[in-house]
Structures are given as C-alpha cells and as structure tokens.
Amino acid sequence: MLLLGSHVGFKKNTQLLGSVEEALNNGANTFMFYTGAPQNTSRYPISDELTSQAVLTWKENGFDYSKVIVHAPYIINLASDKDLDKFMFSVHFLQEELKRCELLGIQYLVLHPGNHVGIGVEAGISNIARGLNMILGTCQVTLLLETMAGKGTEVGSSLEEIKKIIDLVDDKKHIGVCLDTCHLNDAGYDMKDFDSFLNRFDSLIGLDKIGCVHVNDSKNILGAHKDRHENIGFGTIGFDSLLAIIYHEKLEKVPKILETPYVDRQFCPYKFEIEMIKNKKFDFSLIEKIKKQV
Image (cartoon, rainbow, N blue to C red; front, side, top):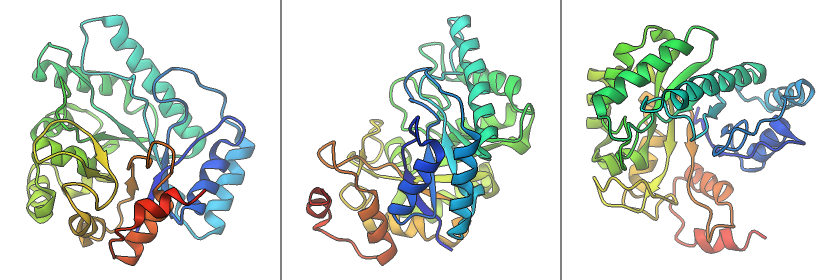
C-alpha cells in the first residue's frame, strides 16, 4: 500500500487532532509535524485528551499510526561543540522532544545531523554520535538522520558521513535514516537513477535503516549544494523520477512525506500534489488549481 502524506500543522488548541484532520483533508494516510515551532524552544503541554481523540480518528479511518513522523526543530545542532553550553542545550532539548514523541505515541523522529561550524566534518561526526549516545536508549523512539544538501558546513550530505555517524552510535536499534530527494539531488546523487542510489545505500548502510522519505523536487541542478525545494514535477528531478521513487517496491512500507513549498508563499499544495501522485499523471495546470483553492 502506498504510504503518502505531507507536513501538517500542530497548533496549540487542536494539537494532534488538528494534524490528523488536516492530513485526512489532504487525502493522506501518513503525515509529519513539529511538536512546536521549529526555530525556537517555545513548547506547550501535550494534551492527552486531544492525542487520544486523534489516534482514534486516525485508526477509525483504517490508517497505521506507527507510520506518522515527527521532525525535530532546526535549532538543534549536535555537530558543533565550539560552545559547550550550546551543545548540551541541543542534547537536552532533543531529549525533551523525544519525551514529547513518547507522549504522542510517535515512533520516529527526523533529525538534521547538524552543522560543524568550522571545526571540520570528522569532528562534527564525532560530536553528533557523542550527543546521540547521551540520548538514545532512554526511550523507544527511533531517530532518523536526514540526508542533507551540503549547504555551508552541514554534516550528512554524503552516505559515507551518515554511515560514520551510525557506526559510532551504540544503540543501533534506535537509529535510522530519512532520505530527502531534494537534498540528495543537491548533494550530487542522481535521483533519476534511483536504483543505483539504493544499491549504494544498501551496500553502505542497509535498506532496513530507511525509515522515511521526504519527497521534494529541486529548484537546483545536480550537486548545487543549495537546498531549495520545488513542487512535484516543476523542478530538475521531475515528476516521473519522483513517481518511481514514491512507488518503488523496496520502499513500499516506508512513509513518503511531501515538504514542497507553498505556491506564492500562501497556497498549500499538498492536497493537489497527493491527488496527482495517486493518479500517476503530471498536471501542468497544478499551480493554477492550487491558487484557486480559496
């Protein structure tokens, strides 16, 4: 069965129930959300009542709640210990996010590995693993390291870097990978030859470690190291290549999550993109249809 959804909101008054309702409205059977704003530390208590209602509603629609994903906030950076206080803040804040995932019954948390901020990739890898070893094993949530575009001092733009981090993590059971198609393209991996990429991933890390795929087209050429998402079929990866990834038999049980940009920064594309993907036919008029949704 195709597991397809998108990023959805998580608001104070409706919390997970609002997330579920938004996902259902989009025609999704999985989704991803932040448990609070990704760019700051402001967090409000998790409502057990809203969580219970949400999970019940999701299951009543026949969907698997174990395939729902949370994304960790961007401000967490385990790769640099130039400022030890900031490093330990990232460790503790990530621990709190994992606890929030447990309260929500979420099994997977996607994490950007971090930026080494000038200390070098190898030092960054060591720091990420050190931070994860302080955290993993304290709960049952699995952390998925997201593949990055290689912008600035990002760590994790190569499979070799991801493998090194995983190799240094003690709790192998609770560490995995989130593939991001835009990031991979921008890092230099050809998503139009996805079988070759998967073979390489399998030989280095193992396909069983893939816990999520972020499906995004890219505004950039292969290897640009820029990380600029594009709507499905309107970028350099292309609709057919993305469709082949989404429906790949080796990723059948892996949630695929859209993180494509809002049209004109105000019109949400997800309902329309999900419909287009289900129909397996690129719609050139998609952008105009999205603009007319209001």
